[in-house]
Length: 150
Image 1 (cartoon, rainbow, N blue to C red):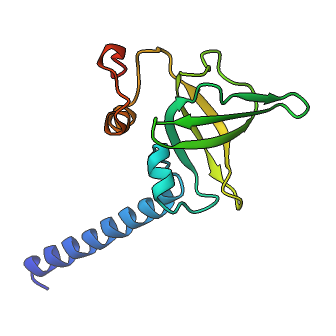
Image 2 (image 1 turned 120 degrees about the vertical axis):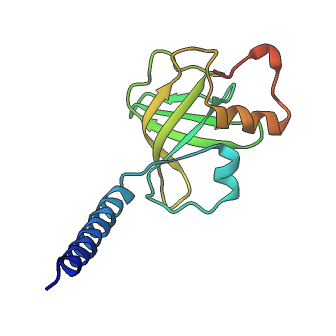
């Protein structure tokens, strides 16, 4: 066999192994990807139940309640257009409060209830993810004097 043919076969086999490796990596990572949504996006899209996702927004004023019998916290996240009701069982971050920017990670159950398994409160009241800022601006509730973007 000519050296040129050997190189060509080597390159083709290498490319096949590379493509196979990339395929395996993408297949494995598919279950690990967590998509970020705003409440308006959640309400406008059909979300698969038991699909792990993150919702970012602001804890709606007057929405927080605590069920002390089973350590359940119930609150709503808003982007000032739509709200998503969240159920969380666990200890909330110290910075968690109404009007504060948060990101919750969890799943929707069959009834359409969002069950959070992690709540992340912003470390600074002046920070909010750019996608949440854009959603609030689109809703017309954005106030420049708040300066909530990073």
